Amino acid sequence: MNHCIACGMPMMRAEDHALSDTSKEYCKHCARPDGSMRSYDEAVVGMTQWMVRTQGIDAEVAKQMAVETLKSLPAWKSTAT
Ligand SMILES: [Zn+2]
Image 1 (spheres, rainbow, N blue to C red):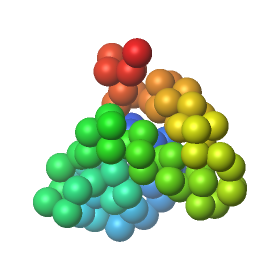
Image 2 (image 1 turned 45 degrees about the horizontal axis):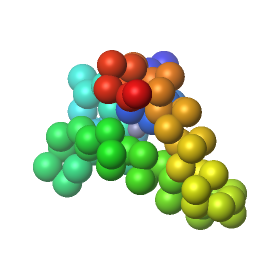
Image 3 (image 1 turned 180 degrees about the vertical axis):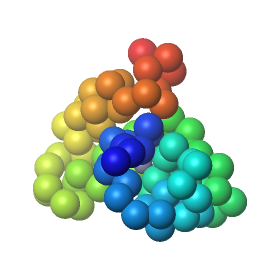
Image 4 (image 1 turned 120 degrees about the horizontal axis):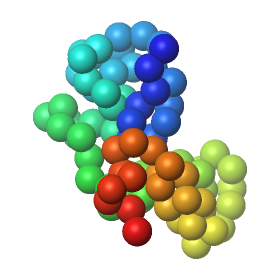
């Protein structure tokens, strides 16, 4: 099983991949409409909003958690500070 390199989500089916293309290493949530991978800043915003929405935590706290989580993922290891 593959995990998305940009958010860590398990990708179990072809349609979980960007554009349903199993050769892509990132998931549909991390892809822009044109199929390219979103930027680090977009990933931080996306994950922050997702945590606020699903866990009801404060946006500032969620952002810190998003940055911490993204740091450990292959797509951002060299990007994140
Ligand atoms: Zn993803």
